Image (cartoon, rainbow, N blue to C red):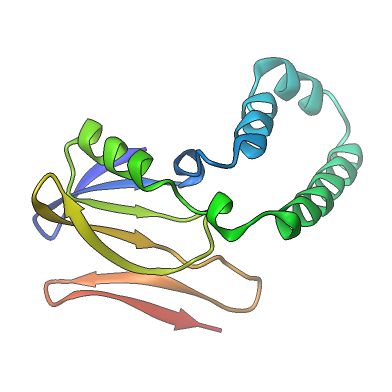
Length: 141
């Protein structure tokens, strides 16, 4: 997480996975995968072994994701608001949820904004372009 000033607006940049607090299974897996013990063990393996393990985890993740309700995999609104309060921002930019767009809402009686970045693909994707005139998604191929 990192707070920046973006066109005069205090803005929090983050991955977004910590905002999906209703997906308890993912949060538990995240803790395990980021633990020192797991990291040390994983990095002790050869690159070929790591690639095989990563491919298997992606396969399992895709299967698990397809069985979950959309609401569980999206951000928890209360977690979003609390995270923004803790960081003193009125704007949040994140990815992870794969539901790109601009989401305006009220936070403590003021307008707040959550910008969700699109997922990246090898041959297509988008980027957030911010100018003095506002923010837009710019596509690339």
